[in-house]
Amino acid sequence: MYQLNTLSLMDEQAVAWDKFVNACDDATFFHLSGWQQVITATGHRCYYLYATQHNRIVGVLPLARVKSLLFGDALVSTPFCVYGGALGEPDVRRFLEQAAVELATSLNVHHLELRYKTAQQNNFTTRSQHACFASALADTPEQILANIKKKQRAVIRQALNEPLNFTLDSNSDDFYQTYSESVRNLGTPVFSKAFFRKISEVFPQHTEILTVRRQHKAVSSVLSFYFKNEVLPYYGGGTADAKLLKSNDYMYYQLMCHARMDKACNSYDFGRSKLDSGAYHYKRHWGMQPVELPYQYHLVKAAALPDISPNNPKYQLFIKLWQHLPLAASQWLGPKLSRYLG
Picture 1 (cartoon, rainbow, N blue to C red):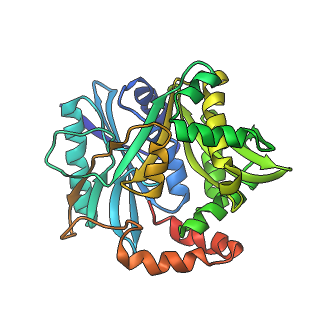
Picture 2: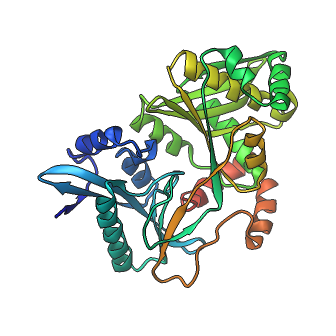
């Protein structure tokens, strides 16, 4: 009934793939074919499956294999992305899911992981460890501020009184310094600067960097994605001064206003956070309701579902040690590890 195909790098069918994704209501930014270039550049093998009927694409499923001695061997849709899974009508999704199971089995990986945004009816095991947060964007900056919870609104007003300003561009230097310091402080390995450059190179119309400065010094910065009238602040963080200056709060509020006023976005996707984590509660303070993400798994070699969460006790010592690394050392060593944290 359907024909299974694989999208190769720089395949002319990428145009048809993206046309399908743009027309599909359930599609996300992370389903675009360009992610194959980004993921391949990190050294991982991609398997971008798509189904055709009468020579027309009717479903897609982006997959990549992430294999390491430390974190295991998995076939994932999609690594480095919060959303994934098959797109298409229910019978097409089942066709692609079965193809993914067969591929995972042939590759002899530990497990297959599909990062669905909404619950699916299939025979996979579902586990929700993260929640996503989103909200509609009001028509004016004043209304956007008014829609934020009272306590968080007061924090933003405090930040607006600080001598802060922001720029919008594609220059990744200040962003990288700010972001890498932020994730080092959290005990997380940072991606390489080349990784972020690749994203901007592949998606020039979909990416933008907002950087907050105080006296010309970058204190907060975020790389955002724009897709289907929605803004997704995806990689963001601040320096040690950010907490005192409330510059992260200032940054996200200014991004909301810019996305609505200048980019005609009507929705704000604040991304995923681990359930009951600090980031989870921070986003709730903005007035956004958490929606649990029903990621789905099929075990191949593994006897149990994977647990590479930072809350896993076996990673706690590593996190504490990483937090004390000099920034330059974390920037050198981080990319060698982060490419496996898909």
